[in-house]
Length: 295
Image (cartoon, rainbow, N blue to C red):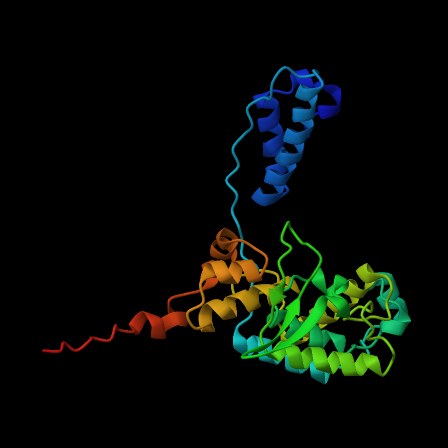
């Protein structure tokens, strides 16, 4: 590795940055290398501001190659959610000692909670990110019933996006099931968390959901996508957006992007990139209706 610690900022030039970039490229993806260079640029910008460096050196250009997270097909999604429901209350086959040592899972969480199936269905019908699972509270949720029935989610800001999210109708039923279940345990107050509310350590709560979701994927042989992409809870968000692209009637990318708290560019690069012509064969084969002329 380049000996950065033995160089002053004034000695860091384009050649040194290129050497550093080449070293990182042996171990990390282009996205990670690009992120490291962003950090270096910020440090050197500060060096210029305090007078340690006269000017910023020329930075190597990194061509970032994005690998879309593997979305699930509708058939895979139904297999996953049905398996999660079937395994509810089932003890994990590993011993308590192994779960603690290998996965940091406490004995009190050695069985599949119902929250896993709820989280799967909720994510696919609400466009939320996995990180939202650990912060979502009842006070963030409003049931709206008018011409359409949906949930309005007023979540804390994520990635500079603070607009409310509206869900699909099935999310309402899932929310009502969860509320009824936890109301019986007196864990459905406005400030109670929606998923695994009895776990005060929210990072651990997220870990429990991810652990059992991965168990479901392993049992079904769906951990890897058809192109070798490793799937995770984030694949449910990918599926949510992809399903709307495939089956939403007349939906436009701007509306979808704003509701999913992302950008049109991200949807084009990461989500729409997996949509094939065959998946929209009916649209490709459709024909405009000819308007009959009147005399």
